[in-house]
Image (cartoon, rainbow, N blue to C red; front, side, top):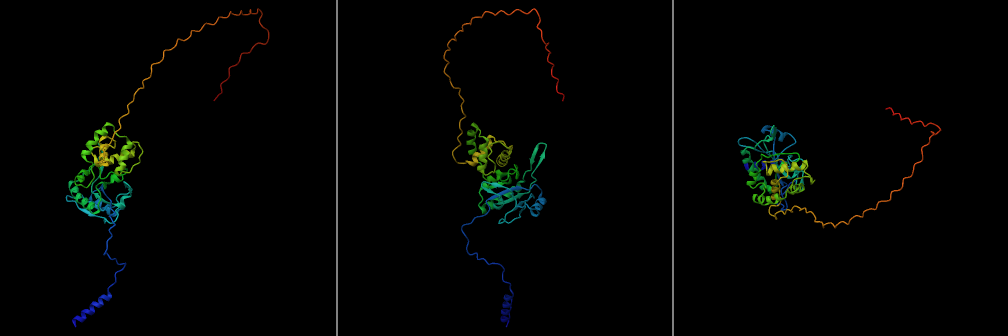
Length: 326
């Protein structure tokens, strides 16, 4: 009897169950031809404290996939699922890609950014505990999405004309030592430095190298404002001790080592030698002919003056013109 009642109850419950809505999917098979949508990892600073950063990244239009706090033991908040695009990159480009929100993962780090002082702009440092928490996060992301080290970038790399984060105080070299960021080989830099020192490249060379590495800038051939700004962004990452944006020897060597890490060393054309042509000696000048003086004519005698003054009308002297009044 109990078995019968239990069977009836199960049948009743099955009849009352609501069938699942929407289409049903069979996940038996998985396609081989696929890859992650994430090609880039972009790092930022928040320009704010923990509470203001959380408020901005959760209640406003801007967002990021992760937020690393500045607590003594930093907390890592996952604010946007990695399968979705976060709104952190804005108008941006790297190599042949633009609008990188759709192809990147963004990490914000709580940091006040910079402030102006009488000594100039001063950037805030990052706590070592933040970097220690950040490195495993970056490693996990780039491993799962197969993001290349040269595509681990700062906001200042993908939008150099309008952004400076994460700034020159961010320890890029520490991430490079962990194998997460592309870095110029020191031996290669040392090898190309004397070659470039013999004849420093022109501005067009720097612009071409910056574009080859990935930066977006107009190839103007002039040391204009946009070129100095992009050079400064490059220096923030690879030579933070001097970010003046000038095309100097050290910047040239770093660019050459990054863009040509294993190829033949650059060939510098020798400076043109200016020589003065040797002219043949002039031919001796022939003596000029001495002109023969012309004979002097005999003077013609003047007629004698009249003794009686001439008659006729008296000449009236001309009146000087009157000036035009203004």
